Amino acid sequence: MSDAPPPRQAIRTLPARKRIALIAHDGKKSEMLQWATHWQDTLSQHDLIGTGTTAERLKTALGLSVERLMSGPLGGDQQIGARIAEQQLDVLIFFWDPFSPQPHDPDVKALLRLAALWNVPVACNAASADFVLSSPYLSESYEMAIPDAEAWAQARSV
Image 1 (cartoon, helix red, strand yellow):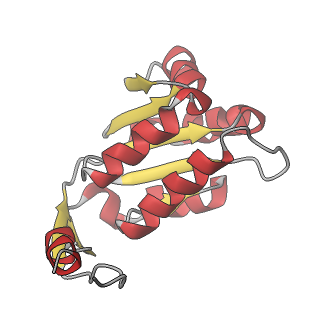
Image 2: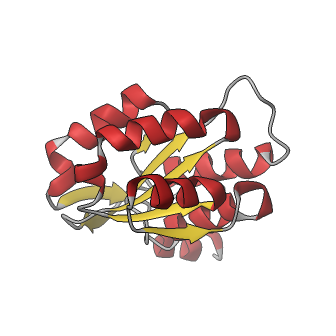
């Protein structure tokens, strides 16, 4: 049995209309709201998914249509991670707070691990989120390499 990571042999094409997850720790919710206000027109052109209070605040304050999942500590981060693993998410914007320890830090680490594994673009602060949203790839189809999970599973079962 091989413990080597799956090779990036499969190709996934992201649609022009992206599925974007928006997450913010409590200490970053106001910053997320301010950032989203600046990018409101761009965000409204995509399918938005958010965790708990972040999704609710974006809906209420900006009128954006945001699919609301559970709060992060209650499983919302894992719900987002499942979407990544199922290739149902295209971009992750996650304003995490480096100054506040989170009770669900293992879930956050697992979420970021899945995003790295599946080659999902991730922004963790306003500057990186600006770069992601200003990219011409945001509104175009985009081909990217992802792990060939089926080949990897077959190789592990030999």
